[in-house]
Image (cartoon, rainbow, N blue to C red; front, side, top):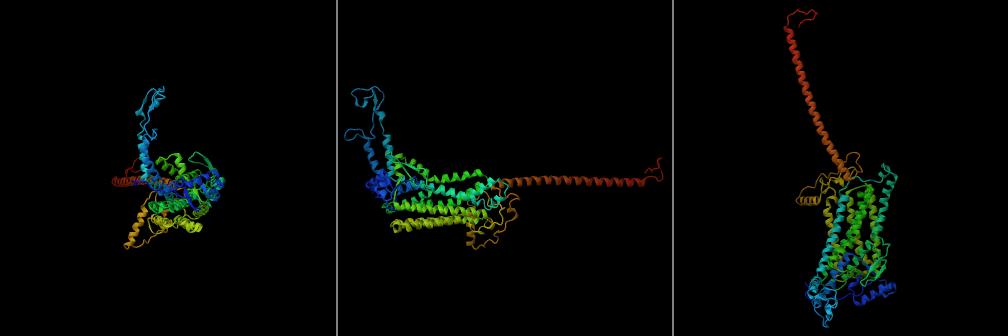
Length: 586
């Protein structure tokens, strides 16, 4: 807890390869930034390639608020002044928060300065003690670091929700559908569907990666209007690309790590945000490459109107950063002027060039990765394609960590905190990859969890197979993997039956190929119900047949008894006695 004033030293201008918030610059730097706002390219900073960016990104905002002591210093210095603003000033004027009489009537009262516009006034109605108490509470909370703690907690919740959502989509759209049949390329040529629908389906899978690239990496065609603290509105062609904002967050982290706070009392906060930014800029983009084709293939493949799901999911993911910032500023009770001032950043020329270069790398990997997933899954659907997700993470991690040093040299690594930030990021990727391989081990390694997870999921011999995993499995297979590891540790034998060949029960009924999983499940339930009903009817027929046979047997016995009785009676009758008809009597 802070018990005294903090010596916050405002920052100088960022270096050409850095990005810093305008709110924490010193007076000289703010003057140059004001000139840049007024004159643009004709200003001193404009001629050096500096630009002002307004980025409403929750992680960029939370970083500089948590690492710098700006809000702590502001909160303490303002809190000690609140109590003096509730009493008269030295010149006799009212203090900012001093109780003020309230006029009740509108008729002026001559000779009473406080009631020049009323005949009656009540001094007690003007008591505003609650306002200075509220201000003192809020400023003291800022001075104690409550704003920094709230920013850190909200950053964790935001990145966790984003990551859990994408991982759940991988489970729902890929793992649970494998190896159910999806529409393959040749099916569009022979399927009984209109020509327009065939062309639309093929064009979607070949053209939609280009649309995704434009959606995530494009620059907004409309000019962005910036509203500054003085109320002045200006237009700028700021890059609104998702990938540009992602990488600028890494540059802001590196720029803050080069300052005094990161090497002293904000060292732990710097390492914490290094972990958050690593997931935000490496893991999340890799998930987008894998999730985008999966959503389109498994949500759109059956019906055309489900393509809207893709747009909704990506819009939500894209707006996580800005909407998260809006909630954080709401929770901190910040005014619109403060929000506008605290979301402006000044960027050097080399930082902007580096951002543009990395954006192209992001987008090319996105485009090539989505095309590869679409064409491969349409040719052969196997669970082993789940390996593409950690491969994309490794590609992004290696290039993004190496790029600043190739671009800026040794200046990209601040002393003391620079190596710690890089090591924290690399260790974060290693831990995440280890967790992913553990959580998905039964699906990544064939025969590891057989026969519960059969080996034919990795090498399906047919596209008409039903998934043996079930609809809800949660951590079931992670626990199975641990159980197998514990068994091997105790000397148990490796499962001999890897189940590379599916049983007859694993195949879908004839004619159901290409049917979505939920439709297939519904049809399978109907088939089972019909089979049960047929079995019941067959049992009833068998019972009826048995009853008929029993009655026939009884009738045969009665007939034999009658024949025997007739024979006995015929043997006992007198011989030669006849009726007049000539027939014997017996």
